[in-house]
Length: 209
Image 1 (cartoon, rainbow, N blue to C red):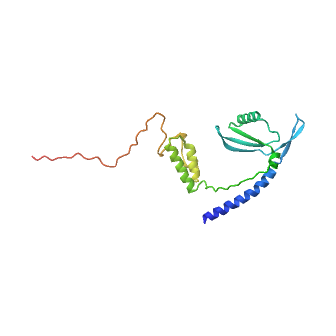
Image 2: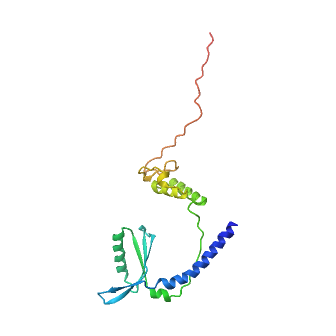
Image 3: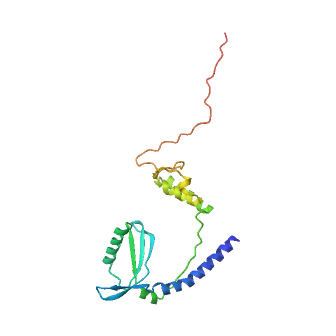
């Protein structure tokens, strides 16, 4: 029954996405304002600029910007614009410049896929989180305890500030997790297991007189 409900919701979302995509592309690249270029004595159109946090290859997490403009500069100018934006924001930046007029007349074929995603606090997400932490610890990867605690509280729908007392703990070993990272060149010490078997008592032999 749940499978049929998920399939119905996914097909409905896909149908709505296909219809809204055409309307969105038709009106998204219309100018929203105008600005006067006093140097060239012309009026320039202003378009919507979209910026999202994305992973930048070789740079880590950064910002990707999609900028509509009728005047596409060369690659050197785009690189200079990215470097200037990085100095302002302090994060790696990638800029994608597109011509709005060309986007309107382009005949594109879109394929829409709707992939159902589990809730962040679902039981399946909890299992994946536990598996991720166990594998990272087994490989000896240094874990950020503060971030792990925050994600743990988020998955269990709790407040991390009230649930944990980290006390300035940052990256390193998570207490209670097997396979904690070992420093390079160091030999891991064997785990000491307390024995529950009582030590044998010395035997007393009675000597007959």
